[in-house]
Image (cartoon, rainbow, N blue to C red; front, side, top):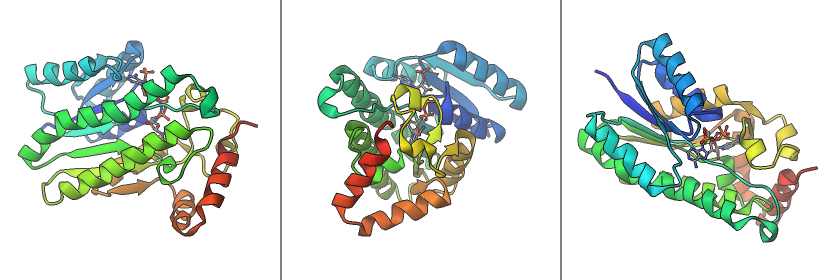
Length: 259
Ligand SMILES: NC(=O)c1ccc[n+]([C@@H]2O[C@H](COP(=O)([O-])OP(=O)(O)OC[C@H]3O[C@@H](n4cnc5c(N)ncnc54)[C@H](OP(=O)(O)O)[C@@H]3O)[C@@H](O)[C@H]2O)c1
């Protein structure tokens, strides 16, 4: 039986690699992001290599109308979404009081509102069918406050909390719910977030996008609710619960600052 995965932010980085994971298992794809040429290129590559159907939507997901448009266009084509991957997201580095509010607001709209809205649109049908999966890309930023990336870290705390709550609500429904929590990953994210020279990106915890996507895909298929990418990251994140918050904040600030 054919299955379909809708992946947001598939034009680069982790999203593009996640698309490759689903395609390898012959799962049809719906790819969404703003850069159409990138999506076309990936769609061509994956449909040829794996003989799957690929739909693309070049949309700005921070626009609620665009999210509804995807939902209705797929309904019209009788394409049922079995897997929803909310991956599109971006960050911003710098002191909050000097930040561009439009950018912070757009971040909240994409990282939080779009993710929640798409989940609300597509999840009910998965539960009615009693199968499928939701993969939300959070971050290890979800586990701690992020001075100099305060809004970004807070959006990822939302993603983790929201996903864990849904996992509990959907227990026994047949729908798998997973939050992928990567540490630093080399993608276009660094450029978008103005974080290229931050210490965290010169640490041994940095992983490649392909590796992170494979960890995320495996975690979703196994129904792993909280999926921290990489052993070194797990060993760093778990003890945070026992570490004084003041120390956590100070170390987090040092790691996020561009040097
Ligand atoms: N890289 C890291 O260190 C890291 C660590 C932890 C978590 N993450 C999370 O991983 C996810 C993917 O990030 P990445 O590292 O792969 O970054 P990336 O290479 O910059 O990819 C971001 C993707 O989101 C899409 N996107 C951005 N704004 C959009 C919008 N308004 N509408 C539609 N699509 C939009 C981009 O496509 P277009 O520009 O074509 O629209 C792109 O495909 C994000 O949620 C990020 O927060 C990243």
